[in-house]
Amino acid sequence: MELLKTLCEIHAPSGNESAMTDFVLDYVKSNKSKWTVQPKVISGDSFQDCIILVFGEPRTAIFAHMDSIGFTVRYEDQLVPIGGPQSESGYRLTGQDALGPIECELLADDEGGLSYKFGRAIQRGTDLVFKTNFRESQEYVQCCYMDNRLGVYNALKVCETLENGCVVFSCWEEHGGGSVPFLARYIHHNYGVKQALISDITWVTGGVHHGKGVAISLRDRHIPRKKYVDRILEIAEESGIDYQLEVEGSGSSDGRELQQSPYPFDWCFVGAPEDNVHSPDEKVHKHDIECMIALYKELMAKL
Image (tube, rainbow, N blue to C red; front, top):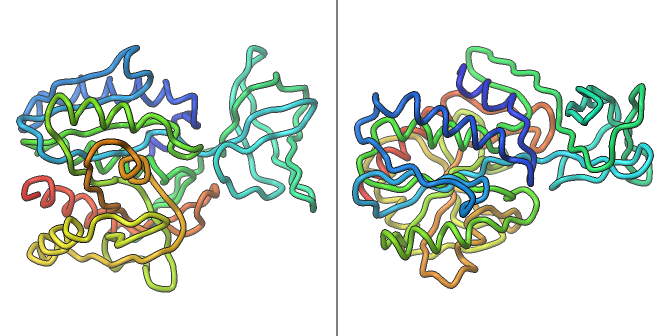
């Protein structure tokens, strides 16, 4: 879990993903010699902070968003949320401005107003994130930003044995998206890729539970094409890997942007479920993580 712990500690809220981009690029450079296939690495100014890894002759792409929720400093001591963080007084927030490192306290009033408590004024526009507190037991891992550092972790573990496929690390997902359309265009036009798996984290609910396997989402706010999802279910059933079926009417992911793009992408959200969503205490069962990685390897080989 050391790699996952490191990923959770990286400061990368939506719009400020560059530290995560640098880490992923360094990780790929340091580890790709041990992978089954050496990927082509596509990044740089034309891709902003996003990364595409191309293995062999790709048919399917994994999309994993690198950003997290957080807060932006407004005026005086006010905060504005980035995405949809849980906001309770007493949460510890961290960041840095031109005056130095910051660790402050979140304050939430009865009317929904957010502010911080710190020994000095924090510069406007500074982004803050939950303070990392990584906890590991025999069965669970718990920390802020399992969503979606665990999705990135899964993608990097799949890279170790991936022979054919694209792995796409996107930005801004937690705050409205925006990077997926140009990433989808690139892999569709250059490699003919038109199907995707969304490596992200979903919720523990009345129908999706800890320790029962990775969740395959039949729908959320958006509805993927049934013919594609049925093929995924067929592969999952043949694999013998534990999985659960999710049906929700809310929530979305990078799959939303693929569905709304002008390119004919099939997509399906496949991810481990977590409790305490968008809080400092997101909690995931280790068995579900293992099932997520194993199923992604099967799907990328057979789709």
